[in-house]
Length: 136
Length: 279
Ligand SMILES: [Fe+2]
Image (cartoon, rainbow over all chains, first blue to last red; front, side, top):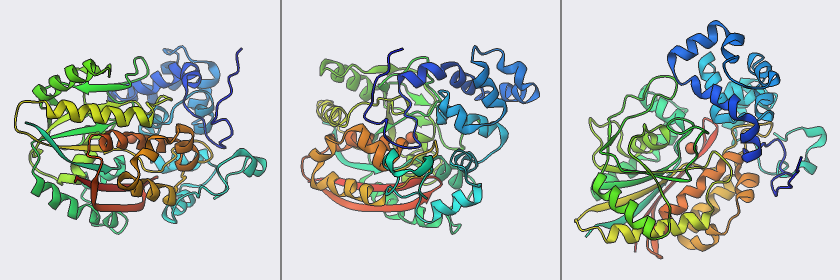
C-alpha cells in the first residue's frame, strides 16, 4: 500500500475526509444516504443486520453501525454528514453524537459549546495531546 | 445591465433553521443569534434585489459520493426544499432565475470554469437557512435565486484563490447580462466548527474575526490561506468558509463593511455574518 503523507496528519482527533477515507467508507456512507427515505429508516430499525447486508460494507463497519460506535464509524471511513443520518434515524441530537465521539456526555458537550467551544490552543497538533486526550 | 450591489456572508447551521421553523427564535439560547440579523433583514428589504446568487454547499442531500461536482450551477426554474431525513423545511419553493443561470453557465465555461450544470436539485439547509435568516418567514421568497453549490464535504474543496477567481468571473458574467437586474451575492457556511472526531466542538473566535476583518482590509491574504490552516485553526468542517471568497471575489476591490455579527454557539458552530457593499 502506498502511504502518502499529508500536511493535516499532525492535527489531533481529526479524520480529514480525503479520497482514501472516501474510498474506504463509500458503502458505509451510501448506506447512510439510504436513510434519507422514511421507508428505509423503518426497514433498517426493524432488522439492522439484515438491512446492512444489502450494502457491501466490511463486517467491522456493520458492527460499528450496530454498536452506534460513532468514532469508529469515522475511523472506518464514515463521514459525519452521512453518519449523522443514523443519529437522526435514532432520534438523537447532533450534540449527543458529537459528545460520544469525544468521550463527553451530551450535557458536558453542550456546556462546553455554551462556554465558547473547545479552544484552538492545546488542540492544534498531536504533540499537544497527552495520551490522545483532547484539551477542553 | 445587471449589477452586483453587495455581498452577504453568513453561516448556515441547520439547527438555526429548526429554531425558526419551531418558533424558538425568542428563546434565550437563540435570541442573540437572531438579534444580529434584524438589521440585515431591514437592509435587504431596502436593497430589494431581483436576484440572489447563493453560494452554499450540499450536505449529503442532493449529492452523495457517487458523483462529486466541485462547482455545480443550478439552471432550473425552481428548486424544492429537500427532505433531509425529518421532512422538508416548511419554507417556500425557491424560484430560480433560469435565464441568468444559463447565461452564467455559458460565460463561466468560456471563462475556463468548467461548471457542472444541474437541471433538477433539491436544496438543503445550506441554501434555505440563509434565506430564512435574511428574509424571515415570508409567503414567498422576495427574489429569485441562482444556486451555486460547492463541494466542501469531500476533501479537497476548491482552493480559496480559485473561489475568489470564480467570484470575479461571476461578476464579469453578471455585468454582461442584458437586463436591468439588482443582484446580491451570498457566501454561506462556516465559520469555525468541527463536527467529528475527538476534537469536535472546536471554535476559534480570534481567527474567525480576523477573517471577517480582512474581507474588507486584505482579501488577498484570505485567498492564500491553505486548507490545512482552516482545518487546524477553525475545525475540519470550518473549511466551508472558503465559499465566502466566491462572494468576495464578485465585489469591488474596495468594499464597505456595513454590518457584522458573531456569536458562539449556534449548536456546534460559530455563527458569523457580514454585509459588504461595493464602494
Ligand atoms: Fe455547510
